[in-house]
Image (cartoon, rainbow, N blue to C red; front, side):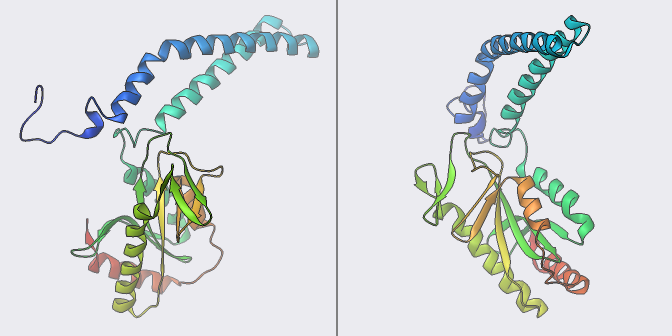
Length: 254
């Protein structure tokens, strides 16, 4: 194992044969092509700026033309950066649970929701986030697929590319039921838990979410918005406190 250690297992994301390694390699190699494309777009922006300046009699013409070109170049740079940045979790450069946890607290904290991170039933499955609030309970896990994997629902079934998605999501659905049983038994409050899968990389339908087979997959921001948008109040402040205390006590940190 040249350059490595026989005692430390290598992370596949950084191995030379991994999809992540090839993705970053091709991205770097394509830098010059992106720069050439950006220059062409900026030139088109300059021409458009000249046309608008003449049409609306804007002076000085050169200033508006250059500003239009710079704006187009900046927008193109941002889009390229954004596209690459959305793969950060898949590439192992960022932690999905840290991103989602921060978004959940920022979006839901002031609305009476409690967010517990990294919880598990002893000897059973674990989850990244447990959300308890006026609208009910949710468990959220974080996943990431390659950028070209299409995540969609057809005929009520979930698909990841050409493969069925049942095996990918069933463990989280089963965990939601197990968590609900435990909290109901320990608190005497009848609860159900809705499973959500926060998708950090992969191609979702327009709108950033898809629901099938009893689970919703959504971008982290969309997941937080869906919880916040629930109109019904099913738990009061006292019940939320009891459930949160019980979850903190009975569910061990993963």
